[in-house]
Image (cartoon, rainbow, N blue to C red; front, side, top):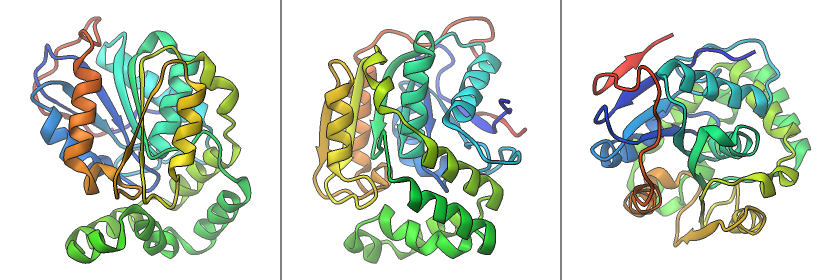
Amino acid sequence: MSVDVHHVVQGPPDAPLLVLSGSLGSTMEMWRPQIEALGGRFRVVGYDTRGHGRSPAPPGPYSLADLGGDVLRLLDRLGAERAHFAGLSLGGMTGMWLAANAPERVDRLALLCTSAELEAEGWRQRAATVRDRGVGAVADGVVQRWLTPGYAEQHPQLVERMRAMVAGTSDEGYAGCCTAIERMDLPPALPRIAAPTLVVAGSEDPATPPGHAQRIAAAVPDARLHVLDGGAHLASWECAEEVDALLLDHFGAAGPAGGGPGDAPRTATENST
């Protein structure tokens, strides 16, 4: 059953609608560079995945259909028939499910540092660890994969903020999303994606190396692939300027997204369900 996720809307009311979906263990804070860069051109909707940040954490386990259903419910609440969608990691998995299963709701799609299929046992073990010892037990390892060592050394305050963000995630929410990743099987759905798709990988990403992006781009019809030079998993921060430019180019080439009743909330409105 879908839930009402916490979200923030920022940008001109009549601009194309762009939904940003984040990584496992993140809040919409992970998209802050893009919200600042794209907020003047798009009506940007950042949201916390169920079990994360200020969104509800219903009992798990979850599925990608649950996470995608939450986005469809969010679009309905916004009165939007269609939207552009950018997802990183778990957010990209959600985006692939949406574009394959609700193609009429997705205008253009960007998939960053993500995968269509991951080895299940590691996610089963991570969910068990979190349920037994809490998210704090995995937070350091998560952030180590998010940023390259050199970038992390130069930005210790960011590392601490990101670690606190991960550790602050609901244990049930984090473990439930681990199960969604464990059970996903997206490759058969990829050829059904009709939305113009940009696939982005970080060359130094240890969590979803470029080979994962290459397989997605090869399976999605007419997808475009870009590998960032030197980026790790959280490319939205470490390679912010290049990611901003890629998203502006990909989504800016399209006509208006969105539409329907209630399509003009005030700039920087917030819903805290």
